[in-house]
Image (cartoon, rainbow, N blue to C red; front, side, top):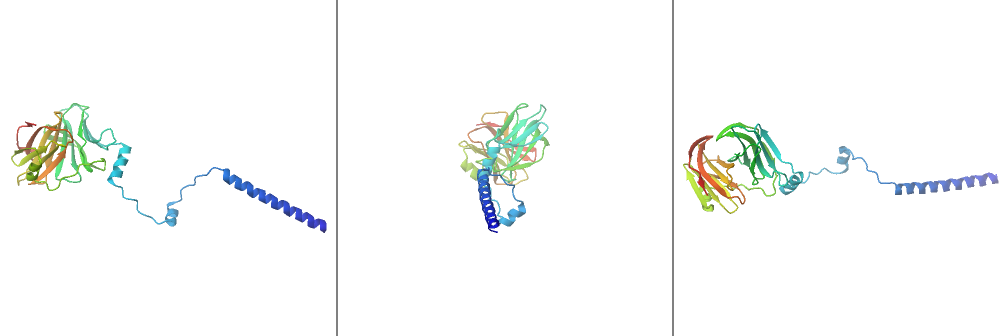
Length: 275
């Protein structure tokens, strides 16, 4: 009986020692093993663990920074023209139009800024096939499309597209600018029947103003920086005593005229004047 009790005690001691060594070995393995990534919990589990909150609002500066990093312009095309709106960090910042085919017409881009449909802008690329023309001065929101013109006649257009927050310093829209205000702010003004064009040369801006109560639309037609291969236009569509504005940074207006149109039909104009 005594021997049996001693044997049982020895077995119990050996079992305890082995259990302790096994636990120590297990701890050592867990310490030395590399951490393993676990699969992401299911959406239902996350919802149960924490309250759902709305994502923080993305500011225009943050969106611009993201676009700068991405560096990919948004582009549209029709046969003969490709137009792009690119972020500051892209290879085509601002808005651009490329002539992609030889033909009788020329490529153009038509666009609206900041969601306002009272002023339409057009850049005509009068260079050869493969040439690119455009401007860096765009708004926070740009709605644009590709077009083909023959002279002043629109012969082909593509679909409209809107992009947002692509530039770090967007052009702001001047509100409630009247022809009288434009004349007071400008260095040079000229007019045709029902339309006036005014501009200043410090951080160059140009206004196209509708000065008559009729169905016709005022239009500024002009060139900048002495380049005869890119014609810029401002179509003022909002009616009497309204003005549309464009900016051109350090590029001076080199040739300009005021015109009046009935949609695409010229009603009155003047000869181009040199600045």
